[in-house]
Length: 293
Image 1 (cartoon, rainbow, N blue to C red):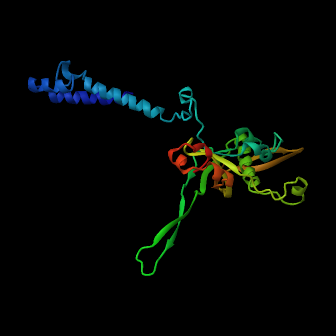
Image 2 (tube, rainbow, N blue to C red; image 1 turned 30 degrees about the vertical axis):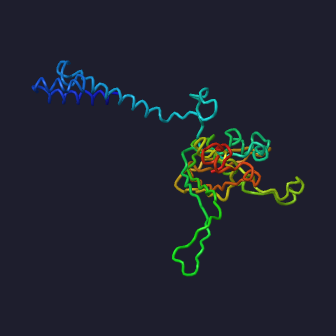
Image 3 (cartoon, rainbow, N blue to C red; image 1 turned 120 degrees about the horizontal axis):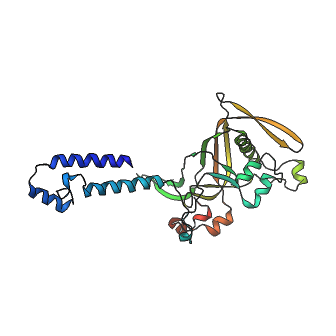
């Protein structure tokens, strides 16, 4: 706030210096439009107009400072939810019904940090390139100068998400190892004799849920992982991460910083597309909770 007081003092001094010795009639005109500027305040140092500027500046600064406070006020009982923090961080998680199958029952397993956190939560704001595709059939008639376009279909965007992950201590190291193992695990289907014994032969990788930016950002978007890439840079340190699998104690070296890119593709069931998608409801924002983007 000292900045605004300094600006206020500087401006009032400048105005006072310029108005000294002016015609009293001019001062009365100025005072009519800008109270205090044309006189009535000794030496013009208590200018009410510039005080108002200072007050407005203080309010603006306070607004900027509070701009990072995000609250969830979007549901029907918004008046009761004012001040409730909204977690808008990027998150990739299994569906609720399949979480146990993905994380397994072992509380101390490799994926335990993600089970506790509720999925992969990006440690810093990721970069996402959002695009969309609309397909039209282009028809040329004989001798025609301009083609005729007929609508075919629309394709939801592939979501390439990239960000750095860090392992500055043992807990972040275990979390990063869980991220690695999660990506390896949820991109594989059931195959082989063990899958036959479990009666899961042919089951594809699970459909996950991606959440980011709140209600009208990515709201419970069902996605599949098309591919992922993990950069293991040579210029960073690698720290040992100890994990216990069954009766075995295992050690894995994890980088203190690495870049991970995940390409997600929205995946909706035919039943959901048929019964829940409504272009009018999508346009006016009513079906934002159905995960359509």
